[in-house]
Image (tube, rainbow, N blue to C red; front, top):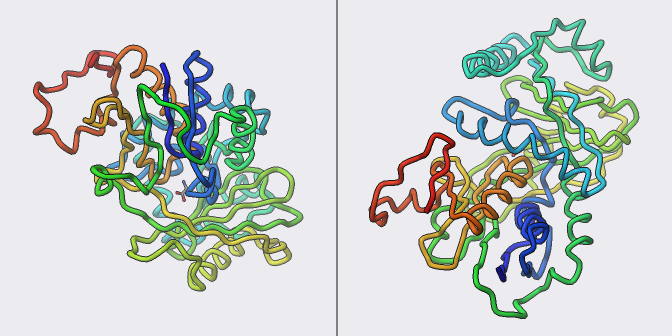
Amino acid sequence: MRVRVLGAGIVGLVVADELVRRGHSVEVVDPAPVSGASFAAAGMLSPAAEVWWGEEEVLRLGFDSLEQWPALAERCGVRLDTGGTLLVGHDAGDLQEVARQADLLARLGREVVPLEPRALREREPALGRVAGGVLLPGEGSVDPRAVSAALLHALADRVVPAPTSPCEVSVVATGSALPEPWSSLVRGVRGEVLRLRGDDAPRGVVRGWVAGEPIYLVPRGDGRVVVGATTEEHAGGPVVTAGGVVRLLAGARTLWPAADRAEFVEATARDRPATPDGLPLVGPSGVDGVLLAAGHHRHGVLLAPLTAQLVADHLEHGLVDPALDPRRFAAHDHPTPVEPSPSGDVPQ
Ligand code: GLY
C-alpha cells in the first residue's frame, strides 16, 4: 500500500519503519522531525514503574511492547538497558507510595523484588539515603534521540517536510497536535526534563518518591542522566519553569547526591499527548483511509513498537485492539458492537 505517515516523532518513525519492512511504500511528512514529545522523552521502558491504579491496561500493553524493543534496538544499533527499574522511597511516607505500587503490581501478577536499603545501595552505589525500595526486573530504558536518529537515517528521503505523492492511507502520528475532527481527543500534559552529565551516575533506571514528589533518573551508561519529569495540565505552551527545574534538581540530588557535581546540559519541556481514558488512539479513525497512532501520554517510547505492529496488522488484516480503537470515543457511530476474540483482536 502507499501510506503517508503524518508526524516524525518516535511513534511515526517506528510505524514507518515497520511498514517499510513489510514492503509498503511509505512517505513520512513532518517539517520538523523529532521536535515534539520524543525530543524530551527520557526513554523509560518501564511499564511497571509507570503504572498506577486505574491504568492496568497500559501495563498489559507496555509489557507486550517491551518484548519487541530488543529487536528494534538491535536494528537501530542502539544500546538497550534491561537491567530493571529500582523503585525507591526517600522517607517513610515515600516508602508507603512504593509499597502501594508494589501491592498493585503483585495483585496484577507482576514480579516485584523487595530490597532493604543496604541491598539497594549495593545494587546502586550512587544512591542517596532511602528508606527502602523494590526492583522491577526486566525493565529499563533506551535513548529515544538515538533511536530516532537511526530511523531517520534508515528512512532517508522517505521523510519529507510536505506531501509529495498520493497515498491510499494516512496514519496520523502527530502526538498532542491532532488535526480536526480529532483534536479534542488529546490534550497536552506538560513534562519538563533535565539532562545532566556527571561522574558516578546511577547504573540503571531509578524511579522514586522524594518528600511526596515523583522523580526518575534515567542513565545512558556514559555519564549522561535524564532527570524527569514534571506533570502539569496547563493551557499555555510547554515552557521550562523555574519551579520545575528546582523540584527536579532537588529530587535528583536527594536520590543521587553526585548530581551536585554534574554538568547541567539541558532543560526541555514538551507536551505529552493525553487522552480522556489514558490509553492511546491506535487504529481506524472513523474516516475512511485515515488511521490514528497518537495519544500515547507517558508511554510513547515504550509503546512505539506495539503501535507499529497494530497499525501494520490493521492495514494488512483489518485487526484492531478494541482498547485502543480511536472510535471508542464515538461509540454511537459504531453500527454494530465490537466483540473481542479470545486473542483480543477483532476483524474489522
Ligand atoms: N514516561 C515518563 C514520563 O512521562 O515522564
